[in-house]
Image 1 (tube, helix red, strand yellow):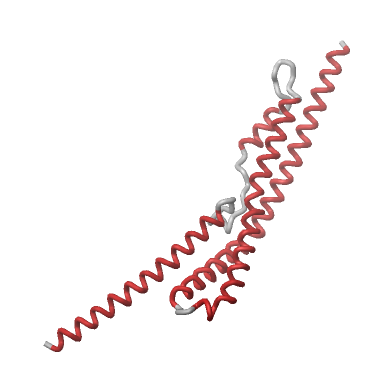
Image 2: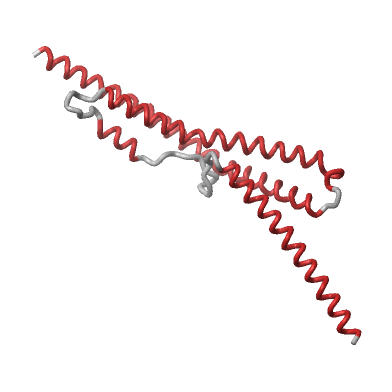
Amino acid sequence: MMKVTIGWHSNLHSLLTITALKKKYMAVVKSVEMFEDLFSTPALFLMMKNFCTLSIAIMDMMYIKNWISKLSLEVFFYFAFIFVSLGILTVYAGNIPLELSSIKTVLLDIMSEQSGPDGSFCGEKQIQCIFQRDVTVLTGWKIFNFDRGFLLKSLVTVIAQAVLIYQLGVTVSSSGGSSNTCSKNCSAF
């Protein structure tokens, strides 16, 4: 009779522990979602501003002859500001899904430690609801997700876009010059 009482009390304690952990996890998720709602739009505008500045600076480098002597200090400070601000934003925003995953791992560990002798888990349905929930990530107004590789992918994209625009400009200006030369030569005949 005493063993049943101790087992029931232990089972109740496990259920209360898992319920408390679930409530704390859900509070963290709600806080992250509230933070996402507040700062996703400013993050989008910050990213757009930084990428436009980066693109313009790269195009200036290609268009202006001797840009190093004219713009090196300005470009250095722009790039430093952009890389530091985007780096900090990306690293901290990329850590949020990793931290939430580690919390889920802790919940799973506690659940497995508190399993019954028959292998049944106390509060298994509560934990399954948490595991089936999508991982919360920070976004830029739901347009893009901040993850660990976001900074590298986005900077390569912006640089490639700036080089493409420059090359298109050079191609258009050189083809426009050759057609003018042809029309001048043809009118002479």
